[in-house]
Length: 347
Image (cartoon, rainbow, N blue to C red):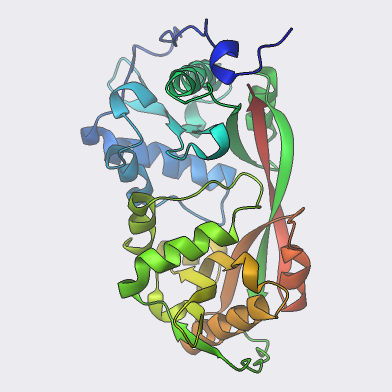
């Protein structure tokens, strides 16, 4: 009989053992001094794995700045005899413990020149073992022992090698996400603003209220857990977030009820072949759904992005969104270009 509580199921989970590989002289934890070398590996992998967007250096640095990641335990790099880092990975346990769910995101990259040698398989084996250990320890600290553990990695659909390695480790394709683009040369249809609602740019003075709205809006979205202040500040305080291109729907009494939040990373313009904004988050709090607020904030943000002189808007959407978001985005002119699959191992 399978134990009901996660802590009991994972009671005898062993810790990760450093891999052994003939091409790698040293496997070790990453250090902040490695950020540029790690970013170089990730950038080389980006050009092969998802050539239309790049990973900012800031994203790599956040692994050394986030309190929910312990670089000494949660990261691994592969170093050759020449001292070159050729592979890197992070096992990040989400800080939320909502509903007894413990979720770990696995991310990593092997430099393209060092692929098809078993380095990725060795790296994933370590990441998977560390993730299981993280979940086991967190479950022991939860009242009731936790309900579910989920290990998750995202794979660009054409990257069959990555998917194959994950499948061999026990991960299965569980959800698909479409990347969608909108040509801003096509006019944006302005929508009437309902009585009692105002459309305003994002206001940094209302970060806490916006975070609360985000968490309410995404409560029933697959894979989503409540964000916290630290993670929210990394997003809205980051180099690429554009409050001026983002829009919020606010009631007369000041409640944020819908939002469309956008970023601009000029390093991605050449990769995509067009200047563009990326729409990070679109949401409506549950008490105000089915009132036309999502298309309203999207249209307002698209108008602002167009006025900025950008050529396209890009977003990602769950193809099985419970709110029908993919159909909504098609209705306002977005077209799917490619897909990403979430590979999951449940504990």
